[in-house]
Image (cartoon, rainbow, N blue to C red):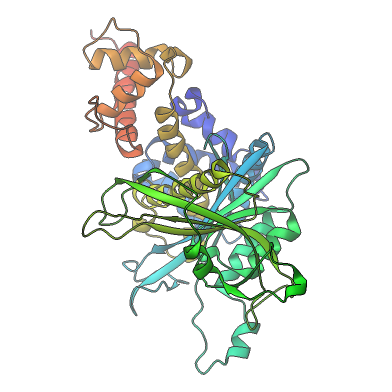
Length: 466
């Protein structure tokens, strides 16, 4: 998305939702109008965005319309993201599931338990984001599936549970919905411990995907280097990984998480090709092994009182040297962009505080807010990767004039990097030399402020003083 679409929400909304097929062109027009209004300030309530009762009522009716679905709303964005992905040689598909907590919406219909106590209600969202495997450039959302948890029937046996549709199968559903990998391309699923699912790995193999996942289960493995005739000993994956000698080391930046601050850690790395054996009693598509590489990353001497960092990863992308191994680790770290997406969806777009009467209406709203969240993440990524080229290559001259005037530097020539840091400063970013790049919250607050001032400039031009 370029600066023009950022400055003009109506153009962005038209390109994002204008081809949505809803069975009636009036519904598509309503969707574009709603998206335009929400894009101006995604955290605002629906009445605040729509600004009058007639448009607000029409928006509520649109979301409640049973003929409109989340899949219909998202399909144009999925299609655009796929087209972007097909222009890259290697693409990462970062996937994970998060819960949307709607416990305060006591009258909402169709919600289910979300695992935060007996009274916690809401639904889950499984999202697949696509990004360039070489630059981390965000391409968009490639697939998304909301679902409501169905409690297990009382007295259910293990055999009955195997026959029932399981939540973990959403990983297989997502890859099947996206479809086979295009010819001459490498698409790599990246997942946390929730993606340690043997049937998911086998589905990846069937459809031509590679994967990098964090290990959760201590599976049975064989080593390729041991001849079959010697009746090789079956090992355990985690035990094997932790027994491998260090093959390299470096300083790794660890992002802040929950109560743990960000820090730099010296970690060591080792890797080994393995043959993962199918589970003896678990679900499988076929009783065939999966050939992969295990990567062990650990912190040998953590600071006192700090839990040592350790990742055991499994990947089907071959590892021939230390550089390859570190690249797989980098890809796993990049999946945290998905955690940022969840935060933007909940904080920047306020999906958990929006009150709708049915889960279907919430899912339709999710279909509108997901591309909005992509837009906010794109803004941050653009700012962080902004080069020292003229700011006029990013936004219009009138935006630059407003920024430099408000910053009391009317004659300075801004680079793209200067521009975004200055805009973020209007949203609370200190812009000190020691500060890291601005985050999406300060950038968006600053951008909204600039847009408000710019509207005032336009009004002053149209209505000069008498």
